[in-house]
Length: 508
Image (cartoon, rainbow, N blue to C red):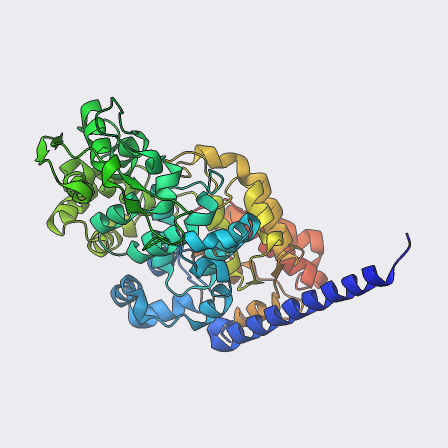
């Protein structure tokens, strides 16, 4: 192949860009190290036979403990830690911000995001979500961002959703993740991304015609977002809800319109007659305000309180949560008019939560993030680390149907081989897109040259001492490597890979 001067210059320029970007990433990693991401000198893992309650809170309320997190929680107590997490604005998150606020496209209003290529938007939105989950101190907030992203699922691959989801993530999900449920649903109802995803942008009823409004979003609003399936609404309620929503649309071509980047209301598309939703009358002439009346009616219905309470209890406690906890959470929903912080206090302070250790299977995203956090690995969430997540079937913002990625276990059981591959690649520092140095952990856990005591490592990753069967697995590993090489890089990598692949680490 002949190398021309032009191709040589082009190659040199690209190499320069790569070098600059690589240098930036090294600086970001070093900044994170200085700002608190470094492994502490000493790690004191849990020593009990069952999973420590402090460790359990870190694992279940967030994405798992980073080195040093357990010691910090113990120093201030579970209640104080929870209050910090419920008020994330009080927690400095500088180290995470340095990594995650690099993505220009995510700050643009919905209409302006069309300036970016789809591949850029898709990559930056996904990378941002992963980096926030891995490095943010605001773990409960990020956990709720994931929860509401599934609850109000939007698939990037439908229509123009890839251009509009960054704004939805910022103005709907993240803005209201720990706020008020009714405000969250109201923001979602007229979000440009949701209007496109569930066909609300074409929901119109022209006067003096037989037009019927599009029912897609109205149905999902009742079935998935608020009341739940078969929980007291009828087909007529869906029709009436669709009439309330008619007229709201989004048009990226409205370049010179006021509020061009937002959804807007077209009175000439709206059915302005009287309506009855769930037995409550909405008078004629409400115009744009009909959507507010609709959201208020469905969000204050008792079925909504029970449905959201059940879903939160399933997410944080058990796939079959205790009925009394669900009822207590639902009563709190009604009493506080949907205050999300209050619901989480009830759930995370309950005895049912405290005694539910190890019952929930981690979905692939949580599995990956918890592994990266526990190992204090360094990543910038590029394509190399996103690839195994796709192979595990959990590509972010890519679930095609409105119900979001499932919480149940069965759909994820086929991902175990890819989990094991990822665990072994990470532990041996062969996973593209990640750098893992085991030596700081080795020293912090009291490791000595030539030795490999698995108990402290297992307790660090799992939150309890290993069982006799688990000790036997480590003894087999020790014999495979020989006593002299048990503390070698290969031996340590194999041990960490075994723990991350174990059934115990797949659950939280």
